[in-house]
Image (cartoon, rainbow over all chains, first blue to last red; front, top):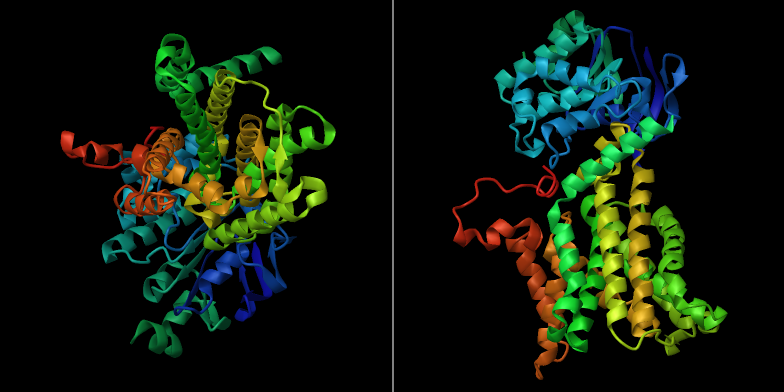
Length: 234
Length: 342
């Protein structure tokens, strides 16, 4: 479904991604794991058109995605749940969700999608008229995911959904990722929380200093000696 | 085909009028009837102050659309004010056409200038954008000052004033301010308003939601530039004289415009008119003091610091703080978006 081929990304003069390549197939949950500064978020930003490529290409169903301006990526069914939520904090919960359904196709189904999101996250329904900035961290993350779902995506990209959340909330969030997948949405997830991520994903890529150093099915990676030592702390 | 469409737009108009509320009509009616009913209270000086307040309201509202609602803080709005003023002035000075045409034409020239400025400055964000607009306004001032063949340079442009009394100017600027208020209010009530605020809140997230942020930032700038230039053109016909240092002034135009919006309340509808009133009154108060000189600028600076610390949402946005000692404490401060638009 999504193919990232040999991409280089720079911030100014600093090269962040070095010839990065990976693939996400239809219906999969794929994880990109790695330490701080490995380039995980940058990879998602590149797919979303927020970070320009210096080299390489990104193909979505054989169509070049990297030539599409950022605001049109969502029309191709790719939604981004950005790091640290990035909500519109002076808008209400409901307004934030509506902002997620601006594209054609999603707009017509707005009421239906709202109902669906409120069904998945009853907390958001309770707080529909509250300002997004006044929600708790976990609720904000739910809102960010809900906003992503409002666009009826084929591919939903999560950037560190567990960041700064209590362990019990993290569990809920990962449960939501599982639900999203059951609705037939392909998932690309970026995480530092390697243990839990490897449990919900099908395949994973390990990113180090902007390069992929390991890849494979999660059940193999979990038992991999290097992964155990470097990321699982066993 | 046209009937259902007409019904939809009639509905939208009704919604808009309902949301507008009575405050706007009351203020406009009071100001419109003031010379008729309370004419004995007014002299030329009072008229002058109200006219200036209304003119500054337009400027504050124009800045507020871009800086307050869209979050793109400009330090160079004098560029548009001056361009509006010079469009009117040059029409009369070079072509012998009435400077009044500058009210509309100046707006369009400023939009064209906004296209250039936006193209250059919107590559930058935050403080870098602010500095770029500041630099461009200064460039405009220097060009107007030195291109003597075209602008008459520092000698400025003088135009015969159309009316000898204040009253016609009073009604004209009242109309312009009312139109500006209605247009900006309608823009914010439309989907544009949501897009603008989304860009202010988080530009990357807005882009990822499918909003072409570059296009909508430019659109916001065009509206802002248009009304700013309209105020500039009004200044030309009202004062009858302009020169580059007055209409392209950094502190007297660009900075005071920001202060009008900030003192009144950024991203509120009534903030700029209230801010304009406060700024004009304070300015006049200091002018009365023989020892003050240009110390009112110092006072404006202090006022700005106090406002930023104690009333970051301005007098209108933080009204509950002003009158807080009269009431029981309010549990939650409404944000700028919801303050007037629940």
